[in-house]
Image (cartoon, rainbow, N blue to C red; front, side, top):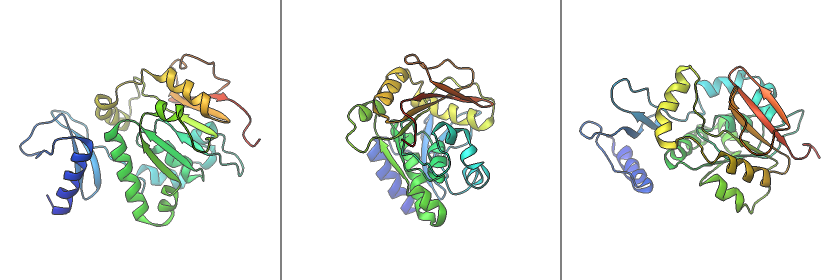
Amino acid sequence: MRPEFESRASALAASLALPLLDPATDDAFLLLQVGEAGLSLQATGANAPGSVRVDFVEGALAHRRQFGGGTGQMVARAAGLRGSLRPSVLDATAGLGRDAFVLAALGCQVTMIERQPIIAALLADGLLRARQAGGEVAEIAGRMELVQADAITVMNAWDGAVPQVIHLDPMFPHRDKSALVKKEMRVFRPLAGDDLDAPALLEAALALASHRVAVKRPRKAPAISGRVPSAELSGQSSRYDIYGIQKLGN
């Protein structure tokens, strides 16, 4: 391992309270790896999926940034973007930051909360590389802020500017057949598990957001127990349950 990678790996292991392993000799179900392409999470063993990392500069998100459909995208519609309206957004279940990046690319200021420390480390690495890339991607990343914490705790004790929109995408037993989703779910589920506290997450979001809460769900999944959604947006494999508080633009 190159000295700079070894140094970073040592610092990351210490900050996450993880053992520093040699993948050639040590066994582990999951490996968090530092390399030329940034930080990645790799499952091991037979039939393990490929590594997962956050990449805002190239690949699928670069294509989506350029050709994704602008404010016509479902996440943008769910968050209430229209015309020149760009609400402030709190993404309380950030994950790999894809939805947050789309909203930031469209001009929103987005605060992201991710409670799983390893997933947050992947996201922080992706943000750092985006900011270092310069140009449009760095500008978009500049509108994204990451907080590694429990979202319910943070929202219940919120003391900053109140977000107009809160975006939630709680972990759910996915049945999507695409290779990308299967890979990420196979790698992440042992870390994150299902969000059994989704009702409390929704309750905290509804108490904080000034204008609306948008909850992403698999298309046929039940709504989160609690308040009944005021509107719904459905796509091919997912939908958004919208909880209106007041009309955006007021």
